[in-house]
Length: 402
View (cartoon, one colour):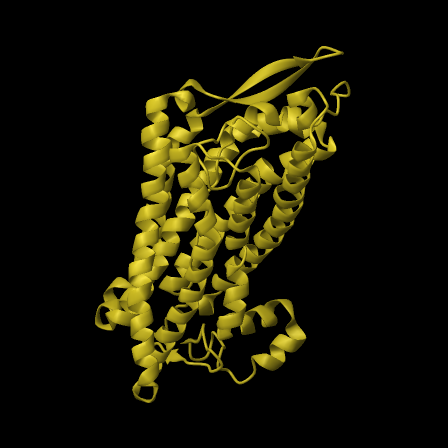
């Protein structure tokens, strides 16, 4: 291990020298895909862990919170994979640091971290869609919400989505293989990641990597999210016009729907560029490293911001956060028994300036809302691995990453 030479990616590819354009590209990828993506991912992991802790509290038990906990877990897994597959390799390639990680650890874990990241991405996308469906039923068909939006059903939905994500991404485990190479001048054996024969098969690329990915991960969820959120928005506008006539339960559902729409808006904003890049790469062969690095960062941001949205829109979420992690202030904010899990078991996740609560007749607890996505791309034959959201050129960077 001590004989491993600290060689940058540019030196591996071009024997050391590089043009000014290549140098600028490497600096940009180092800053965006290495430093910024890594920092955002670390903060996002912290935010998702806090979200899981707060939404798992007994007084937050509800169908929507069950879905949001699953979403936070998928986002956290995706961010961990992004750090291991994108951030650390980009930093190592530019600085020459972490040679052991580049030549030994990374080639060994990429075969497993890459498909796990894609599984987390798929789960995140469809949990976001499921949360939207839950809010659509609660807001637009409230009479059916009692039977459809239950905690038990939410747990079943999470399990089914995880199973679907695993099955859909099973071929990804066979796309990558580790190969060895010898580095001069000390004839040191190192390891690299390479595309398997399956990943290089033209039919597999066309059907699974391009068309299947676009349909399953973009077109279907994007279209469904757009349709259901338009319906929710129209109902919210109608409800706001008749706000004085709404019951407390209806006000609560409208507040949750408002928060969810914010999550979905962020989702669309952060994933439009990855979608465009994916289409250009799959059907026109156009690759822009800077755009792909920016898309990676946007995807990481998308997986990291839900906690902030919950704090802004979730009155009860914010009070529980303060109570758990800032006891002095949390105690002052939570006096009065309103949020006491032993008292009334009321629900008031979202407030928009007010606290709307709904007392549960059975003493059981209810629900907030939110949701979102991402893609982890495999690594492709050029520079560091491509985008968290791109399949077509996924393996290029792996060969030269190490």
